[in-house]
Amino acid sequence: MLLTTWLRAPSQDLALLRQAYDEVLRPSFLPDELPSWDFLLAGFRSPARQCVGILYDEDPVGVRSVRAVGVTNWRDGRHIGTLSYLATAPAHRGTGLGGTLVAEHAHHWPTLGLGTVLGEVHDPRLHPETADERPMDRLRFYDRHGARLVGVPWIQPALSPDTRRSRGMLLIVLPPVPKAIPAGDLIAWATDYYLEAEGAPATDGDLRALVTRFGGRQSWTPGPVMAFAEVEPLRR
Image 1: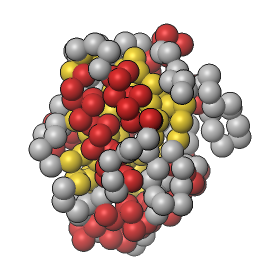
Image 2: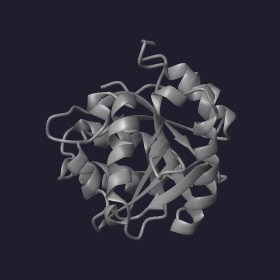
Image 3: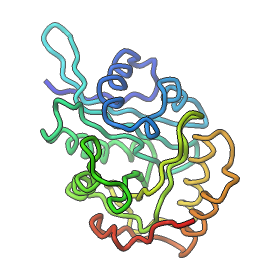
Image 4: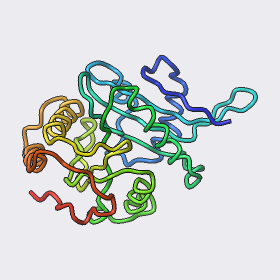
């Protein structure tokens, strides 16, 4: 029997959270894209806010098997969040569980006060396909499940002192999709994200370049995910 739980604090079910981290998140993301266990726990502490959606199966004797995980992050007072991670356990990929969890998140996010939730994906033009990373498949997955593309490039901040920023990224917006996203909201989101992840405001050119691109218009209307070739990459 498949069940879904929503964790707003690790104390709700620390064992299940750890199982989700070890069995689903760690096998699914590159080292520079997944924070440490301690960093994940820090995401629950104010002013950070975090909600982890875990889809799992429980057998008759109470043994639980995590099938899929989604992690949403935002900050106090903000109505724009990030679907930081969405992954299915390796043995259950291709079974529709990822889409199930996207749909459940779409119903759950408004209860958290979130009106816009962004996701980060690799730009297929800048990240070649490998055995562990299939950027085009990921875009097609989100396209099938109602996501839209924000027409701006993205550089993910370093998630810990021993990781690097992830360049060559795109931004998508998950359902329910707003008609437009104010540029000021994107700028505030990016600034908060860099501050939260790196511990200090970014002082180099990456964040300034992103803010300049985000501020190129008053608002951004999300478009088709598969129109990613229309997004001009960030060149510095």
